[in-house]
Length: 586
Image (spheres, rainbow, N blue to C red):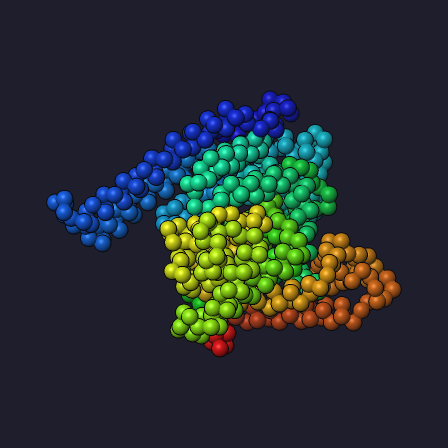
């Protein structure tokens, strides 16, 4: 169904779907999807029979088998993409996740579903104008608030549409408005998925009911832009502080609300320059930068390092996590600067869980180092490290399937799947491919709900690394931060967004790059500038001037010299990575 122009204000946000409407929508979805699943099963049986030959059929060659699957992938991906685009709702969210998993799904699916990240049908501008006027202006004209308002949207997604505008004071902003009539559709889809997953609980490999409960809670928050505005401020504070609470440079930028120009369904925020990550390869080609080139590899490393640092601080520092980091929500600006947009999905983690997670990541890294340094599966150090990981997994609340509760290989493999390196072998013969029958995830009876969005973040980070072809280890990226978290865990601490930033603290916020605090204002009178604040400010100023100078220098080099220089930089980074791995294995 398409968007409509409401006849009256009462038609903008109708009530949730009835059980009959939910069932009708579910039947329509499965009526269109089941033939695709059946076609794959039929092709699997056909190729299996041809592989056995005894029925008189000609033996199939590997080339013929690949061509058969490729043809089916092309047909199936087209049908699935069209179904999702037609039905919209929560199915779009599912398609967005699939589009990031190049390590699991055929290229035809990831490529076709990529357009779901920002390619949903636009709302007509007449509808956009009515929503903004109703939500922010009590029915007054847009000109009472905006000097300009672009009719063509910057992006159009499953929940909202975003337009570029200029406020009367000259600030360039992005205006995000919720699609009318989308809330009952999304909540109805989630209700369907919860009902079906509960009914089929015994047949499903994972406790999807718990997963959909967590995603349903997150969705209700995502539909409230007042909550999103608060989340934007908290996430900005989280990424601008180390895990022990000290101010630090932001690894990524987060757009903030424009004052209090926000309602439940409209949000005015900072405008972000850049291109979505899912379009980066295309934009780089336009600039003559080919995938795999030194420039592309350096950009990939910088992007992934920035995201890993940001999520490390969110998860193990402030305990407030952006829960929807798909490539359409990650913008890349000039020089590889990363911005994280769309803070509607988020998760708060209490301090004890942050500490337990930090210990688990450190234990996973310790196991990988121990197993890499020994060729013996029964090595005492490896077994001890595996037991530590397994016990932490159980203590966090992961429940393994009946009969495998004491399987240390399985418990350890679950942690490695979430936090380990993608190229490492799992103990017990388990597979890193979550679609495999040997996936450890299929042997989990239930996850604690806190791990659902966290797992989504870590899996997506590894999926992005795969797409960018960048070596990536969460243990290496998060190790130092996790040690800070464990070291600072002696007792409860006031959250960053609860600290006093008045007087001297306000200076610390600016000097430290935003979101700083001053330990409750102790240690000096209001307005007194501390040495640490000045030192931090000078450090940032010097780093900025150095980066600008190097950027101008490299850009002005002949292309052959620039390419050679960048190749040397990439090789140096790869040697440093290899050295760290060797030292870690000792």
